Length: 136
Image 1 (cartoon, rainbow, N blue to C red):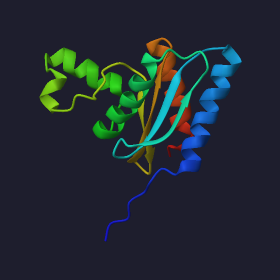
Image 2: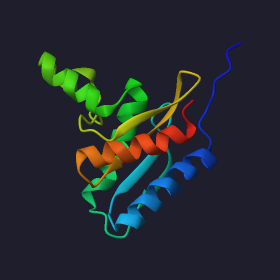
Image 3: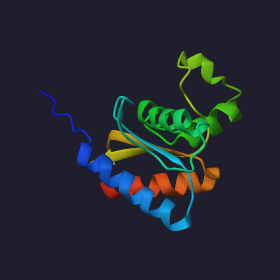
């Protein structure tokens, strides 16, 4: 029998709190989504000054990272390099911008986090910061 590790709600909330503290400290607005290994939403944060368009993007960044078990930016970079349209995956929720990062435990993807609303570099930095709390 296979034992499957799973990201807990407490871990997801811990990740959200770390990102929220950083956003509050810099008075920035963003959306942050934490999903399980299948890409299904576990926890979500939208700051007061977050643009509404960022909500779906954050969720889809996390979804992409979980489903593909890698950074959303890496998937986008590879697709552009190969001239491979993401629609070939048959998955319209995939996002190619940075900010979707998988969360690993013992090398196994147990979930992912997506951040949207800042520059791509800042989205990636915050997602990695949060994922590092749980990854190991």
